[in-house]
Picture 1: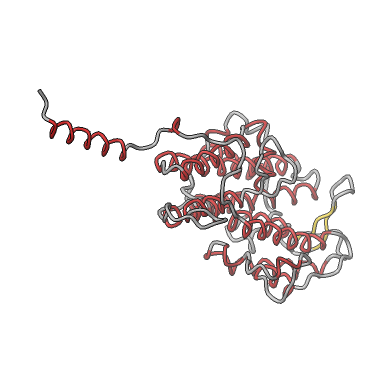
Picture 2 (picture 1 turned 90 degrees about the horizontal axis):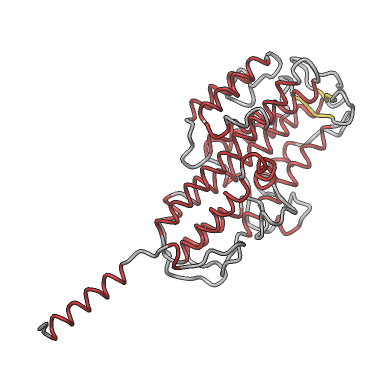
Length: 370
């Protein structure tokens, strides 16, 4: 017969085992929308809006005889200094784009702002060529783009560069990185949740989608827009949103193993959006070499920026050196300020596509359809 003492000890061991048991994914509900308690990613929303105003101003120089851009104003917007934004709340938000951009390229981004202002002094030139900046038109005559002296549309490098070096970098490398994930997950701050929950929410905020995405695809911004563009071929919308939902629910239920799986999924699918978008623009550029100068330079500039952005993800499949090699093949330089799209051939572009497909087998079957 078991003694009462033995039964007491057995019960204690069982209780301890139960308390240490990791939650099972079936033990809690994963919502279908990003409708969790204490969510706040207002800082990310502000930065998306800041980029919208900055990009709109830069692109105002895309038309013949447009007013030249003021580099000081552009850098004020990047730094959020001297109340540069039309949306007054942005000026007093305490947020900026520069300090969230990957440190290695913060100065380079300001150099790009200086460079686009310099190029904008040539909007009266409507036949730009190698060595001469100006505004180029597509063959249809309904689109115009400001090119620098190397045939690069710097507006695209700036916009997509900030998408990559700020939004993508912060979401996947910083907020989903160990420094922001290995934090307190017990103390709840009203309106923000635990530190870990809040960091996860901030990563989601950089995605640029509504809380009921992908059922609702209205008002998509930046990465959300490009995920939606790739969704038909790669099912990126549901995969990314489900990963964000799974990870947030896991954090709230102290299920760190599932959180880590969700981190890997977010990084993998977001990187897939980036590389597949690069290939999409490379396909357009290749088809228009020597055919439509406006379309070629615009698409090649977009492609360059998305390839460049591959450097900034968390746990990327490609090294920085591999990205640099692709940029050199595409435009003779891994430095956007020295990139030149005039010597680029269709074979060069195909070489970049082939290399990207080699690094990312998931796009192999759809590369020609992107």
